[in-house]
Length: 410
Image (cartoon, rainbow, N blue to C red; front, side, top):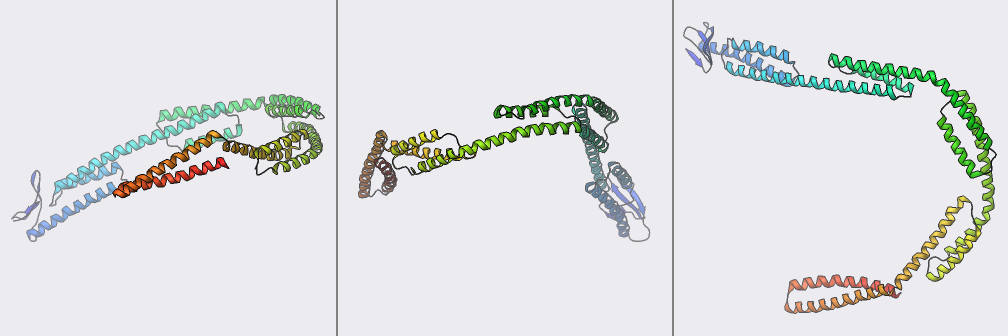
């Protein structure tokens, strides 16, 4: 008799496998040695183990459908349970049980994914329906609105299907939105002729008013009136193209006649102001000679006289006004800053504070120098270092304070 951990060969050549339920005969061997028999039936076991391993790899490495996987597991389980093989058959059954659990988990995952896909598809179709209903209720751009509704229908067809009742209800709403849009568009175009006639009448009134103003020389109010007429023109809407072109041509001709006359008048006025600009150029050059300011009081008096003459000259052309006024403002700012600096230098309270700061720092330095001398005599290294650092800082502060004080004496 020959044996191994999972089977044996009896003296009569019967081959047994050991299982949890006990021994089971798996075949008979009469042609050779018992070891050859065990080796043969072990190979049968290895074949089964290979099939289990391949199934494990397919399940873990591919998207094998659960139903197909379950069928393979059932087939292998039957093959293992009735196998004429020698080996740890229970281990193979345990591995198959693990695969059964894995398939169950995958089935739940697939179910959840399908439910998620349905939920997403429902959300997509609800969005499509909501947009279609908004277009049906609000859209006034008929061409783009109709095109968008056609696109929404194509998006609906491309989306995943949901459950039949929900699909039917949403499609009913989408169809109703398309019908409502078509009715609104038809009603709009039916009333368009009447609306265009109202627009034509309003724009003829606007054109008549514009033509009546074309020769006005009351430049400011008339320019405002034309702006108001333009606002009314835009608010009135559109007539037919032929009417629109004819009325717009008349409106623009009247408007152009007024604004061209105004431009000519302004050009004539600006020409009369060029002499003023030349006079102010000379005054600006005179003012700029005050810079840099060395005597604030004298500069202010001179600038005051310049300003009096400046105001007496009168207006200049608009295209030069900002530059001339800006140049004079810069001179005035420089004189003002010089006055502030002069006041600061002559301020007795500020000078006294600067003098006090200098005196205090000098006393502090004297005290620290005495302290340093004592520390050196006593050999106190730490105190020497601290005192020298304090002295260095205060000497720096004293130099700054003395510079500030010197400014008041300048």
